[in-house]
Structures are given as C-alpha cells and as structure tokens.
Amino acid sequence: MAQSSNPAAGVDNTFRRKFDPEEYLQRAREREEKEEAKSKSKKSKGPAVQRQPLKHRDFEVDLESRLGKTQVITPIAPLSQQAGYFCSVCECVVKDSANYLDHINGKKHQRALGMSMRVERASLEKVQERFGILKKRKDVESFTEKDLDERILKQQQEEEERKRQRREKKKEKKKEMLAEEETTKEIDPDVAAMMGFGGFGSSKK
Image (cartoon, rainbow, N blue to C red; front, side, top):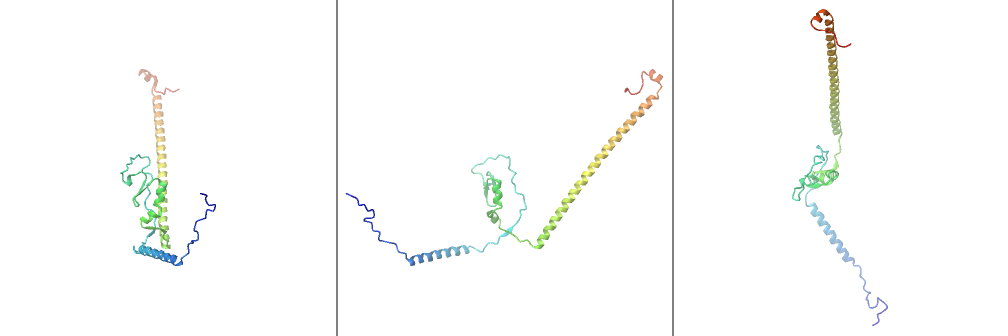
C-alpha cells in the first residue's frame, strides 16, 4: 500500500489552546495566599533576636599544639578527636588551619556565638579610654626596656671590675716574685755552696 507524500495528512491540527484569564488569575491568588501563610508562620516563631556587635578575641587561636604529632583515627572516635581542627561551638571539624580561621571568622560561627557581623560604633569616651590603655602599655614597655638597659650596663660594669681585680692580682704576684728574687741575691754565695745550692736566682738567662 502506498504511503501519502504529505506527512500532515490525516492529522487534526485545528485545535489551539486558548488563554483563559480567569484561570491564571486564580493561580496568582493561590500563590499569594501561600506566600502570606509562609511569612506568617515565620513571624509567629518569635521576636527577632538582638545580636551583639562583633568583639575582638581575648584568647589566642591554637593552631600549632598538634603539629608533628601522630594520632590514630577511628570511625567511632568523637569529632574532637578526628583529624583536623574541631570547633566546639558549631561542633564541626575543619581539615586545615586556613579554613579553620575562615570558619571562626565567618558568619555562621559568629551567629552561634550570639554576635552579628556589624562592628559597634565607637564613641568619644571609648576612644579616649582606648588611648589611655595603649599609653599605659607603652609606658610599661618603655620601663621594661629601660630596666633591661640598666641591667646590661650593670653587668658590663661588674665584668670590668672582675677584669681589674684579676689584673691587680697578677701585678701583686709579679711583685712577690721580684721580691723573692731580690732576697735570694742577698744570700752569701759561700753559704749557698755549703748548703749545696748553686744559687737561688732564676734559671732564665
């Protein structure tokens, strides 16, 4: 049986979908109602949490205490004993130090600590107080440097005094040896010969 050369023959393509404004309006209303219900459910969870502004850390971040150490890792070990850096606030393990620093400085960690990512605006009184603290710290550091200089100077003086005392002892020894040589020269050579001594002088020529 021969097939028709026209591929559209026998296909009814006279039906066209018509745009119904009422149907799409109803869909838009339903979508708006769902969004309103979601927003109400979010608001009903409670008032917004007032977070504190960012604060500087008052402790040093430990990044080197476990360097060069060998540790056996087991699948059933707690997170704090796994390989990497453990955050006790977020209860997670970070594999390297760079990512760990990014984590503890990040938004999620700061929110867990109850802080926002905003910095408190400093007042004039706080700036003056901070200047006072830094000035006191500088005075203490300068005092310690001055104290160190004094200690070094004192040590140098003590070392010079010890050297001077050693030089004086050497001079006294030399004087004693010269005095002994002079006394031996005064002895009669006949008496020295009777005693079997050739002389008490120095053997150096």
